Length: 247
Image (cartoon, rainbow, N blue to C red):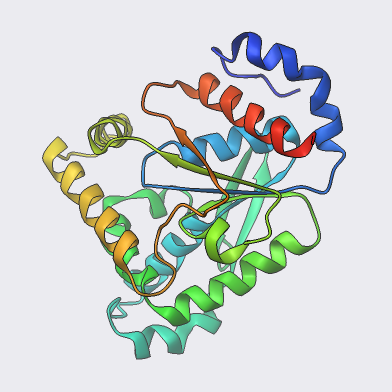
């Protein structure tokens, strides 16, 4: 049984009787947003609560980046990267209440979250061949089952016909604090300034790339998570989903 995070409060209680109705629908939810805005955690919690499959597209780009780094392939070379895409197999496997990323059969969930990968992933994601390859996989994943998919261009490019679109954001300062704490908890030695620089750089690259930039889709609802904990984020998202699916 999934435990609803603390802080969900009365709003969730009022909607509990609607959850089963939502679960019974074929539902595709697109969740976009900036790095460290809380979208991956929110997607995970929504997937558990609504019993949807969670597709973390950011993890897919990170897995491609990890493969390139491990095989000493220039992450800025469009030609060299394009040549190896067919050698990269990315899958997700659920273990208990969490979905883990596998690269060519190897569990890489921790490796893809390192600064080594973070420093290169935005550049890799600007390569059109990479985006086309992964978008094809992502659409295939969403075609036959209910999913929540999070990333940078889900509502605008990957799944423009999604039933619900949510755009998650928070200030750079708040996102820096979150990411810095996350890395410290993992024992990573890094300064807050380095984290802020990395996030700002990724924001710029993601928002200004020519192919599928990070934008809020016209029909996406903005969810500012700056002042919200996990439970409050989940409650607000459920209200949005309930509003979209009950009409």
